[in-house]
Image (cartoon, rainbow, N blue to C red; front, top):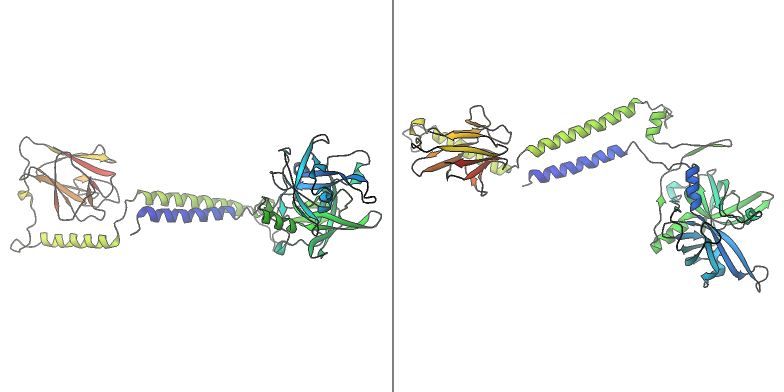
Length: 464
């Protein structure tokens, strides 16, 4: 048998899940476009990486210094960059550092992973300013593959920008995606035309929502101000971060943009914005404003109905099962047939008022209500009292869980007490010790004994 509480809990959980789904559907999420504050947050994650005392390219017998770029992927200080940026200090990381806010505030790093074929590396920088916010990585593979012409931009520290002094603010260069391709040993890369110079190596290539889609790697200039550049797709980084259990943020939401001439217009295409702004839908029809109002009213109405249903179910007493209900109903019908039989039959004659014991002189027996029936009082006299919710009941209890003629109580003059009888109720009559009073059976009660009807909230006590 499944109790009422188990059934109610299962129904309530299902309705709650359905409500959450309905509430979440109209607010389909799309990544927010970049603004001034978002640009500042993005720049805080782009780091300048310095290496010193490394062999010079033209003269390996001399020691040189250089710099590159990296970007923060979590708040634990893990930074992604190029292999060729930190290759010269592998094995002696003391010759590399990251400026944190100023060139005098140097943070040493530790190389976690470096791969020459992919031209990727992961380093860990300790003690970085906690105000720096890591970048999220975009999923651009499979169904989320970017189309040609998608706008993107690079961020880093090109050496040509240091002509008038070294800087710690990254430089932004915009461009568009040209192609998806693979190079040298199956390395997955994207081809684009966002300007990349020495010093940009290891910097992030981002979409217009500020999420990293690739890592700057190599470039070839075909002429003055013109070049083709390749950046390693962020999927290569994601695979290694997962293998090493390094936490990062992966954003699979779309970043929808529409480009018109030289002006880029950002659109956050959710159902709510289409309704409020009256934008064209996919089929070219305007979404009316009343649709949002109707949707909100529908959700509110569903909340009210669910709450009312739950309150109604909660007020009902626990059920006793269909089998027990049928057995009790059959016992009640048979009892009525025996009481209606003629006096000459072998069955017991129907009880009349003249046969009821009278209350002995000097003794007053009262029925006192408890719990929700607190304040209910009745005196048990010459005639038995019928308790129920019917209009003909002597003690009226207004609740759907109580039978119209639920139980009967009267004086037992021979044994000097009070008898209690259940009249075939569905939810039963119970003594305080948990014993059920069977229909048609009288139970003797003494002064101070208590009982309840179906639910402990509807309880009585006998006082002599």
